[in-house]
Image 1 (cartoon, rainbow, N blue to C red):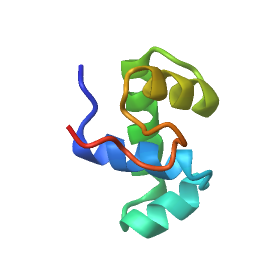
Image 2: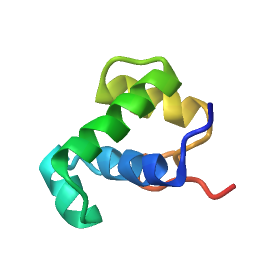
Image 3: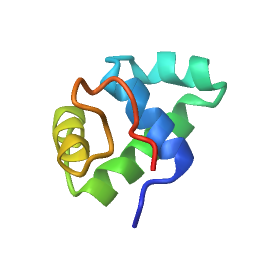
Length: 73
């Protein structure tokens, strides 16, 4: 399954090193929503950590080379 637009937003914030709470605050969503999106990202990328998710996203071309922004498709 491809990542949704919101999951890509969360992924970009993860790449920026932000905490779940900071992501929730910036996206104006609940902490549990961030955790759900993160879990979906991990499942879709078949990884078990934020670091693995960033590596896999870069391999798939979802993040630019410095991990700071989502690649437009």
